[in-house]
Every structure is written in C-alpha cells, then in structure tokens.
Image 1 (cartoon, rainbow, N blue to C red):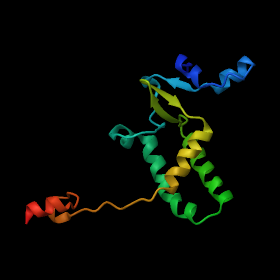
Image 2 (image 1 turned 180 degrees about the vertical axis):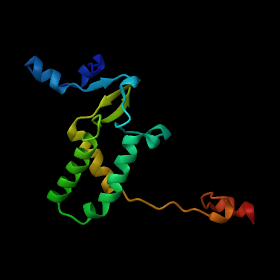
Image 3 (image 1 turned 120 degrees about the vertical axis):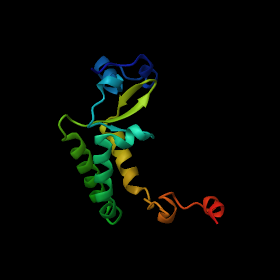
Length: 147
C-alpha cells in the first residue's frame, strides 16, 4: 500500500502549479510489512545483505563490473538499464527502497540508476582471510598477540 508521507511535501518545489504534477514529484513510502523479498534495500546491515533482491543485485553488479569499466558512456547506460530491468522483471517486481523516518521510500528510476552506476564504479577488494587463524581476517594487532 503506497501513500504519501506529509514530510515529503517539504522537498517538492513550490513553483509547480498543477496538482497532478505535484503528486508525481512526491516519493512513495511503504510500511515495513509491505517490503518484498525481491526489493533491493539500500543501506547497511545484515538484513540488507541476506535479502534475496540484494543478493541478485550484487551478483548482477559483480558480473557486469568488468565490462562496465571497459566500455564507453552509451554502453554503460545500457548496462545500468539492463540491471534495473532485471530487478524489475522479478516476480513480484523488485524495487529500490531506502529507509526514511521509520518507513521505506521507493526510489524512482533515475535515483536507482545512480545507485547502480555507483556500485559498478566501486572498487571491490577481495577479503584477506588468514586460514591459519580460524578464518579470521589477517590483522596486525591480532597476529602480534598470536606470536
């Protein structure tokens, strides 16, 4: 169930005259119970990492990152759009959402594309695992204690 949050009115430009134009500028807010497994949750935390939509999103970004970095701007736009289309093609349809004031705000396509392109540009570092010490990350202070 979508509804318009009263605080959203503060971010809308006051120069818009037509009421339908005003409504189209407002973000959609969701109750926590209306969030789907296929949604991509923006933000940090284990709940976001384990979400099915976020797992698909991370896999698509990982598969496309190398070709994104080696391509020109028009090809990059197509890669961004293909990832957005794959998220939205799920059943039920996936959305990009972010937490705001105790609710979730559904991001429009433009903001979702910005998030996708940022994820594709980020440099992924492989995790350094020290297998000798019970799978803990290699840490200088930890290794000093062990010696």
